[in-house]
Amino acid sequence: MTPTETPARPPLPHGYPPAELYARLGHDALHAALRRFDDEFLGANREALRDYAAHWVADPLQHWSRRWEYPYVFERLAAWSERRASGAAGLRILDAGCGLTFFPHYLTSALPVDEIDCCDRDPAMERDARRLQPPASARVHYGTQDLARLGYGDAVFDCIYCISVLEHTTERGRIADEFQRTLRPGGLLVVTIDVSLDGRAEIPRQEAGRLMEELERRFQPLEPFVAGVADPGPAVLTTRNVGRYEPSLVPPRTYASAGGVARRLLKPHTFPWGKAFRRLLGGGGGGSAASELTFFCTAWVKAPGVAAPVGA
Image (tube, rainbow, N blue to C red; front, top):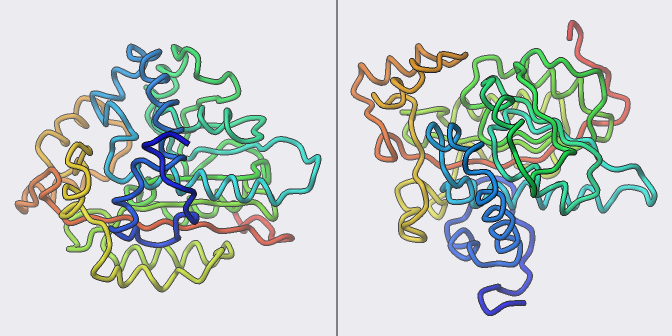
């Protein structure tokens, strides 16, 4: 253990991130391992990542919510993997709405993974991924796909994770059906979503609650966290207080900002345009001041013997 690492901590909890725990997260052992791999990945792939960095964030581990979401997802996958039968084959994992980051490549280095399929609506992710250099893994494959109409077969994935994507989609029920169809019985689904506490961005708590209910109809939650989305409590981390803990973290970009809309006009793949323009015209503004955001982390299993949804 290095001087900057703290002793082992309990796994990050489901639900909203407690601000006090978030404040201690930056220097623990898992975060240090993620940081080392991310630095190497960025150093080797700056040219391949240039477009992603320009439109999203140059260093995803410095994004305000990913600082928590990446460790949360990793811990769920690692714990689920450890419970598998001895001698079981390596995992096949889906990164749903992947972007272009170090994270799936880190997973192949740290967990018994045979293959990770990464899919995104933006064809630039698949194009730029062809230029990735080690430590990028050859076991990570990229494709351009619509989450609501996945091209994979039934029950092919051991695990699916989806980090801060579903709140930006308009076909959440259909996407949940696709996750159910492509996940193997007994498989793990990990989903995180941004939540707008003041209702000025994706998604307000009421909509987040409906999304949790959609998922609960198809999967079994690992803990009874579904009702908790309605009440973050006073001690939750938000975009209003995150600067107290780490001023260098990157705040969220809201799609309603003039700059955000201009970026999407240059690359007009599928996007919830109506909501974005309504907020822009309504004075919603942009940047971290536009809405008070937090995020909600969940993990689910597909019950053994559950059939694919009718019509999927």
